[in-house]
Image 1 (cartoon, rainbow, N blue to C red):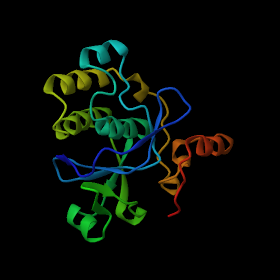
Image 2 (tube, helix red, strand yellow):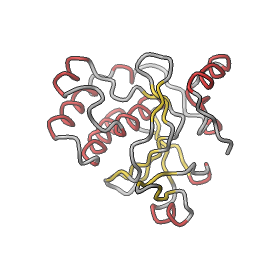
Image 3 (tube, helix red, strand yellow):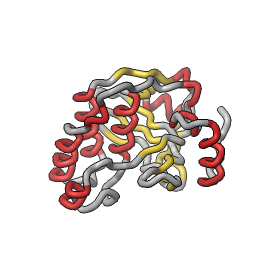
Image 4 (cartoon, helix red, strand yellow):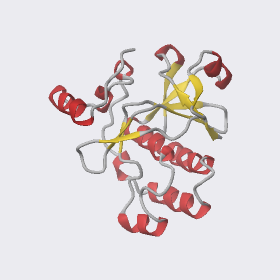
Length: 193
């Protein structure tokens, strides 16, 4: 298990405790599966109560990539799996070094598949992803893994991810009127496919 990309640059949005990912993130799990958290995805990084944040040092002290993949899996009950290997990503130049860091360009939908994920699976993947950062101490990833067990947001209706909205602000299920102000407020430009 390893992170194939550096932590994404984040842009603060007008909503409290919400961030927009300006770059793609790729995680390779212990079975070799590669998962994408797409740019333009809106996250709150670590959704943890203040008392747990206090025990852990703060909500923003640790690498937030594990929180991003966990947020995506919890929001959609699905993950975006890359259907080609790491070497193919490099050969096709979707995974490249830039300024000393590995970055991921937009991967076409023909190389992506939506896979369903259960609560237990995404919570365990969250812990493995924290471990894979190699910067989050064991006490912290065990504390945070225990905390997501009580994520009651998992319950209820969760619409499937719309692949037609991949790499757009619209993937966050905003109304068009909100999207226009969201774009101008954050000054992030959507690239076309």
